[in-house]
Length: 277
Image (cartoon, rainbow, N blue to C red; front, side, top):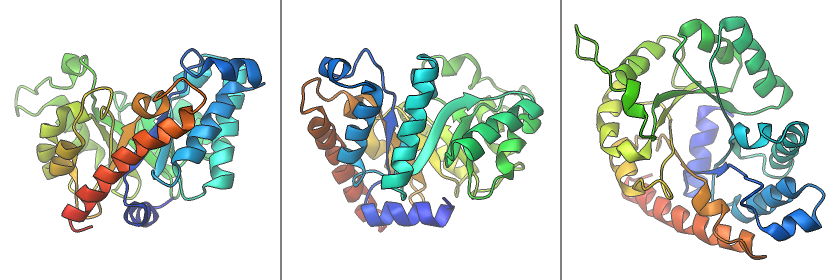
């Protein structure tokens, strides 16, 4: 999916919601474990059917699938195939946080873009350009580079300042990586719990899309994210996972998930309208 298609989906659906499919077998309704041969796939399909008209993206977190071995990988592939077959306008992100030397990254890129047909993959920038560039060789595919994350440990490294310039490490990631890709194939992860910093980030990368986790269960403010981070094309994908996925553990879990997603979408619609989009 290219940049224009993604922006058009946001305007058409009045939403920039990304639903995180961080599906934990220990948190899904227990009746699914007894009644379904593949409860993860059944759960995911129900969540997707209930929310697809309210969001523009899905983001499976691969750790939740890899932890189950081959059955988990099978569940992931079935989930991605289901989205492609039934909701082809959805932007699908592999939340894999890969980052390795170039030839290994080339194999990761082949896995996620050729074999599994994701639209985007999250990548760690620590090893530099040659570890990221293999992902950027695919047409209409995206690298989502970790820049400023929402976890407490972000302060361990990401705010370290360069002695000569005072530039913080996450700012250096933003400035340097713009030489590797463009606003058409490179996005950045910026945590919602640090929304006030989006204003400065937008001065560095005014045109790129941002993937913003941390809204909902992690306490980030959607209004603050939009205030500081929205650009002329919206330029935001705001992720919500637990708040939507686990809204209920009863048989109406999909309906409860939809209700939570609808609340977010309605707020996003208002924010888009206020921004003239």
